[in-house]
Image (cartoon, rainbow, N blue to C red; front, side, top):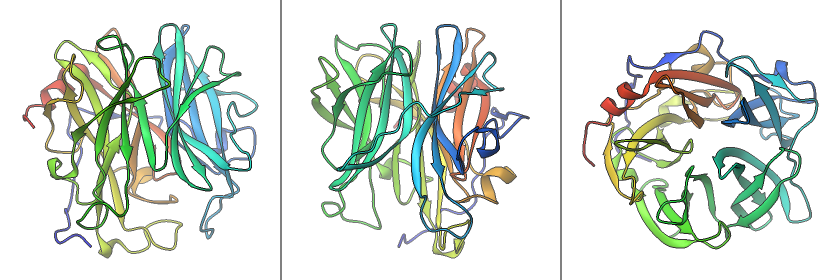
Length: 333
């Protein structure tokens, strides 16, 4: 149990929650759907593309989702979505129970999808590539336990680069988890190494539990603008959702990584970028007080669209100007 609960948190005034929030929820899905969240979003071939996690068979009072698949939707404006009639990715076999939490990166004219996999022998991360969202070529999967992987949108020093969050249970001291953000690179997106620490939980003032990557980074002249998720635990929160007990709060954080050495944090915001405040973030969900970004798009106008799962139940959107986000990253690590 953390010695010091974090206390109240708020979002900065530079972000604007979309008036249409939630932009996607179970009622919008033309097949069995209960919880729509943690989507990856990109712009590809002139359209916004969203691949979203769908936990179906879940109802209030249940403890676990019955099953999970990944659906797909398209949009002309990034707000109103046309959901396709069937899921685009459903990974199951004798070893794998589900694939989930997709992240999309456009690189070299193709779309790379990072995702998590629950298996009989632990949680693994995977990367697949597609050009049509119908056929996915799985390039690599990690050893347990690793997840929350995101791929950078260009090669850096001739290599693919990803952020990831391994989560060893027994090798770290301190309450209760303390999982951190790491960097790895690869010559071919199949074999990965050069693993280095990017950001530790101790570096984040609004965290007392764990952190991990969120949306894939976007490039700016000052560095890679990068979101992460941050978790704090407070036993006083009680039930706080459909689950029997939910005592965590997830916020979005923001940092700036070096353009050429992306394992180096140039600066970061010492306060959350998005904290749970809106009704669809703080109540009525499977797990209330959860913000989890999965997609970030920098428009030519300078507007940044950040897509996030709220309360592990719906998908939402905030916008901000890139200059304002860079200004938030005013504190050296």
